[in-house]
Amino acid sequence: MARVVIRVPAQAKRGEVIEVRTLAAHAMETGFRRTQLGELIARDIIRSLVCTYNGVEIFRAELHPAIAANPLLAFTTVATESGTLEFRWSGDNGYAATQSVQISVV
Amino acid sequence: MSRETQAMQDDEATGPAALWLLDGEALWRRDCAACHGADRMKGVAARYPALHKGKLVNLEQRINLCRVEQQKAPALAYESRELLALAAYVGRQSRGLPIAAAVNEETKSFFERGKNTFLRRQGQLNLSCAQCHDDHAGRKLAGSTIPQAHPTGYPLYRLEWQGLGSLQRRLRNCLTGMRAENYAFGAAGLLELELYLMWRARGMKLETPAVRP
Image (cartoon, rainbow over all chains, first blue to last red; front, top):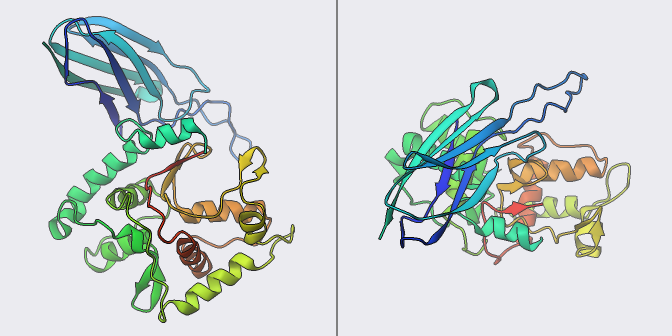
């Protein structure tokens, strides 16, 4: 199951720098490992995370092999106005997850 | 354990084990909460392994017994995501409580056998558990600190595994490293060892689900 966890402060002052932490459950299979019989295990990773803040893209990450399983991505942004932060993960084998959180700026 | 690993363990909201806790909560709501309520398992994990009808069982096996006997559902496989998630969710409710696995007249024979296993030399390297975990605890083995064999945080997220795993998985790893004949999951030998190790950790705070390197 494509379980994801996001932590964003529910409330922030206008202009405050807030930390956004995201965690996604994923095996992040590199594509370089082999089975005991010598067959290559196909790559299966998350390729990208995109975060939009009220429709405006504020963060984008490209993920590559050799990133640990269950990647935790944390970044900061400036709280400009109340609204929605939307997160979109996508990856190999049709992996896709979206989640959004509300933030109220006072 | 490094400061970074400790920080990962303390980060309850976005630590890696949070993924299993959320899965466990969802499974508990679906399958268990009707009888057991939402969060009434406080202190339970600190008492296992324990006796069930004359047999020593650990928390994972107890969950499976409930599934098989009460729910008439198939048992979950050892180390399956579902079983680990449920064990972590139940264990989380006892976090911070002192470990108190019962060693008494009834469990004494299991305890003694577990202690013997810990002290007995075995495998091609002719090592006993005690030689590393008592005599050389605190020193380094392949860059890692040798711990004192206190299983305070299982099931735990091990960075080497990139996932959650049970104490039995860890014990089997250790036995493989000693090149000793291994036990199957759920074998009596492993359970006796689990009981002895939990006795060693008696009074220490449960950290489930912990993070280890």
